[in-house]
Length: 373
Image 1 (tube, helix red, strand yellow):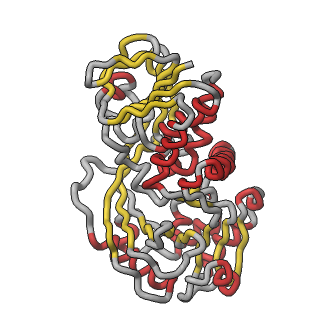
Image 2 (cartoon, rainbow, N blue to C red):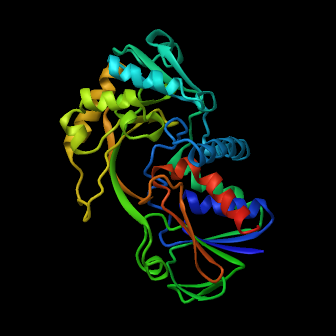
Image 3 (cartoon, rainbow, N blue to C red):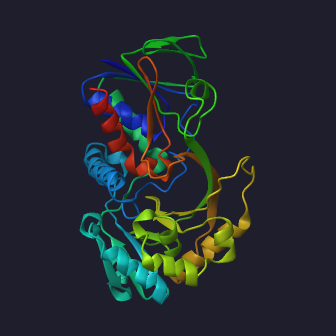
C-alpha cells in the first residue's frame, strides 16, 4: 500500500509513522522547506492532566503510551516522563485542585494533591510562595522543534519513506491522487491531508463548510535557567480553560476570584516547560477573532514573567525568543479531531486544537485503523 501524506507537522508525521510501521510506503509532502506551524510553536507537552473525560482522555492516554514507545525507538524526540505541577495559593484554587483529585478518573490521570513541601521535593526549582499543588504524574514532554526531524530520520531508515519539501498540493486529480505546484502527480492508495491551520486553497475547495476555526497564541522562550525544572508547570488560571477541572469549586473560583485584567483580556493561562538546552518555554494567550493581529503585545509577556518569577522565587532568565502561532480547532471543542473523507481516496484530518502535540500518535492510529491499513 502507498500512502500520500500532505503536511509536515506532527499530525502528518505521525500518520506517516503509522503507515510505515504497518509496512506501507509513504510519500510526505510539505509546502515549506520545513513545517513552520503549531507543531514547532508549542510547549512539547504531552498534556494528559486537563483533558475532558471519555474519548478525549482515552485518546490522550493512548497517545501518552505511544509517545513513550516511539521515544524509546527514536531517542532524539527527547521524550521525558516529567509530570506536571499546578501550584495553588488561595482557598478557592485549592478547592478546584481538591475536586480534580477526587474525580473518578483521577488515578488514570495520575492526579495527586500534594503539599507545598512535597511539591518542592518533586521540583526543587519552585522556591516561591504557594500553599499546595496538583501533581499529574502522566504528563510528559518532547522537543517540539526537532521532533519531526528525528521522526523523519527514523522513517527514512526504513527505505519506505520519502519527504518532499517545498511543494504545495494544489488539486485532487483522481482516486488517491494529487498534483503539486511543480506539476507532479502523486498517486497512492490513500491521501491524508494533515495541513494544520492551513485551511485555505485546496482544503477550502474540498471542504467549504469545515467546522474548524483558527486560534492564535503568543509564547516566549528564555535562556537556560541554570538548574533543572523537573516538571512542567501550570498556574491556577489553567483550571479555567481545561475541561477536566469543571466542578462546583471551579464555578466558585470564577465567581469569586476573577483573573487579573490582562489575563482575562487575553484569555491567558501559564504553561511552562524546560527544553533540553535548559531554556524555558512559557505561554500562552488565546485569540479567536479574525483578522488576527500581525504583531505581538508586551502586556501578556509581562504578566507571564511575573507569575513565573513568583513560583520560582527568582528572576526569569533573559527572554531570547518571542513568537505567535496559529492552530486549528474544531468549533465543537468536545471533538478530539475532525476527520472527513473529502474526495475518493482522500481524507482530511484537522482541528485538534491544543491537543495536536499530545494526541497525534493516537489520532494517526485511529485513522489507520478506520482506513484498514
